[in-house]
Amino acid sequence: MSAAARLAVVVVNYGSSALLETNLAPLSRASEAGVVVVDNFSSVEERRRIEDLAAAEGWLLVAPATNEGFGGGMNLGAAAAFEAGFDALLLLNPDAVLTAPALDALADAVLADSALAVSPKVLRPDGGVYFAGSDLHTRDGRIMSPRHRTADSEVVEWLSGACLALSRSLWQRIGGFDPEYFLYWEDVDLSWRILASGGRLEVLTDVIAVHDEGGTHREASGRPEAKSTTYYYYNVRNRQLFAAKNLDAGRRAAWRANDIRVAYEILLQGGRRQFLRPWKPVSAAIRGLRDGRRIARALAGAREEVAA
Image 1 (cartoon, rainbow, N blue to C red):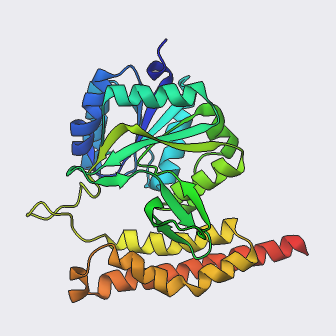
Image 2 (spheres, rainbow, N blue to C red):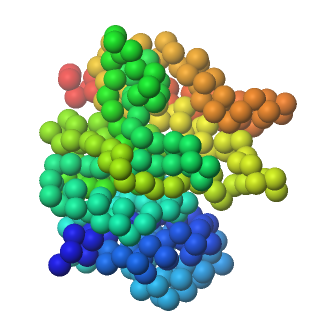
């Protein structure tokens, strides 16, 4: 049995059946890998489309009644894959394009070393680099490319969940994704726990995927739209959730001192044009700050009760 035949591609769908037909179907036809699609419920019509597509392509469909988020959906898909007998997972976004040889290389890597999680180099459609490794700066909670690393930087590397392969044993050792994140930062948290468990992370720079970030949200001109309010809210909120779950009191205080500055930097990722009508993005960031601090206080209180 080939390595690819022992691996399941797990994709979480939310209103993206057209992308799955364009991107995932050709891969599944060309590869021996299994495919598990988790359809986070978005509409009756979309559920019907994905049911028809999964039946036509021979995919295993998991169909929760609600939207379980990215991490929660991936956890459902992983459980279904393991129940079906697969030994490894490839977590893949609907708007990511991967060839069968690239999938083979990822499968070979994680089945040869069960403690290893790997990502390909991920390019944008124009050839620019979307992901080739990323750093979490532990002093202030910024996420940056490794090219911004300096001699005095304190960083922890992480791998993007847009295209990530790992073995069944590693997934089960760390317990999969933390569903409390719902969307964004869950891959940072997963990578952190992989490293804490003694696992390793690696970008296979000679293996390429293409990721059309925001492929489901484009203007008539073809340009990506500004980031969504969901993006702003969860990135701001979950940065604080990560700190509350994983850092000591001193680091949490240092991150908290940078909350507003980093929230502004997150808003800037959607471009300056959106500030012509700033209410929606800014209010999303403010809600993220509020809810993140609320969660952090609740977790801190729980820790104090346990210590007492």
